[in-house]
Image 1 (spheres, rainbow, N blue to C red):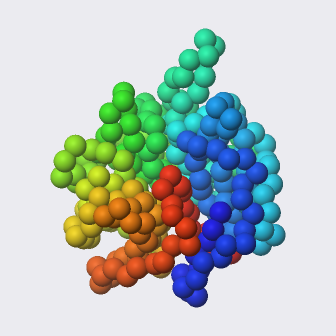
Image 2 (cartoon, one colour):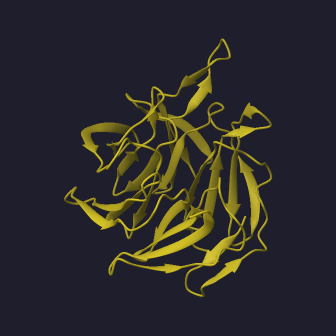
Length: 270
């Protein structure tokens, strides 16, 4: 695990790696904590919840998920970690889609079922702001989607479908996408196959073209202080790290400390 300090423009390499190496897991952050949930560990679905405390620089295992889960999405909002989509094992030990939305109360270290996803997805992106959960992209019935659904968190903590369904701008067949919330009012979306980048205003639900000069990328995406960070992946066969100034629509480069391909990134206060 490595970290990048955007204020000092430098990488922090001396951080402890997660205790378990996993794939198809999900990552989220809240205040100074990073959460890794589920995934596949040693060829088995995992129900583990690992929390990295940035101040103490150590990993702690918390109460396990309601059941083993992989290829799901997660986001933390107002002291609660939400999980949506993904797969689980049924009684016949076959992989089936997850329809339940689970919530983890960070303070009490407890889980509960808070809602249902009528269109369960694999590997979607889940974002949260102002009591609304935004689920973008992902796979349904083996095909990538170009849609976004929204869910409202009620006063009693339940999650209800708002009925809002949007089709995201896409030049070709839908594929993998990356999305991040910037300054709590714009969602930045990157289509990996085409490199198309656009933003969604969460207030008026309007889409805005950001830049179309990128070639196909496969890096992770996060946003902070009106800047979007596209880290890892490749462009013209070389590892890349790009920073987009959302205000001016201009790019700068970041030198990566190592080649990154299948990875995830998150913004967190340290």
